[in-house]
Length: 318
Image (cartoon, rainbow, N blue to C red; front, top):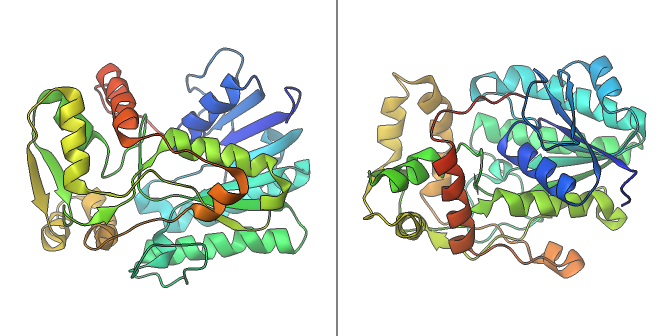
């Protein structure tokens, strides 16, 4: 990569998008951050552009001149079925028109319930509507590559945490740790999981964008060592200097909460990921490109620093 190359981040206001903007800007690259409202804060020198990912014409304009387009779109849960397919098509159209590499930031929901660590060869057996949609989106990304319409590559990670990431491992853990409150954990707290620090995910996506040998395939990003939810919460509270407190909720409670909360209702179908071991295996990426994930202790400390500076709710967009 050269400093003259244009790197476009679509969905730049979310956790993965902002981490990518930071990573690319720190490398001295020309960065264009695409956000639906166009009013996001960005480092000095980053070009901010307003565009709607579902508008293919607008995406062609927003991606014009790009060498790499990073697709970090993430519509609100309740709008996935409505917005995700046209948003993906719009970004693919923009990247294809620019002759750019399309890097798709993906999750692991298409695998469903697994028995053993997940690799790139794990079959798709989704057990939720969102997992089924994720499987369809991934196949659409790869199909565009194999039809010769646009060069694509998929980077896949487990549950994310870090600055601007709102997930199970977000404010309900880090906010509670900073305040000395009680962390809420949904699922079984003593099974192995592989949380992914969002900055590590961003660095891996940049690697996939520049490594031509990665294109046309799915890659699991190397994660830090597996640990349990209880261990993760313990590390967060210890780093915050507060006494660990934790309460757990099973799938029955979460589904009951779904009767009164749209967010809980939309997320309840994904709780299976925290009821059995859910480990992402990224050795293939590490062998090909090298990767040393940030240790959880260091990543958690960095995440807590961000939450100290941002105690209020986030405003996100695609």
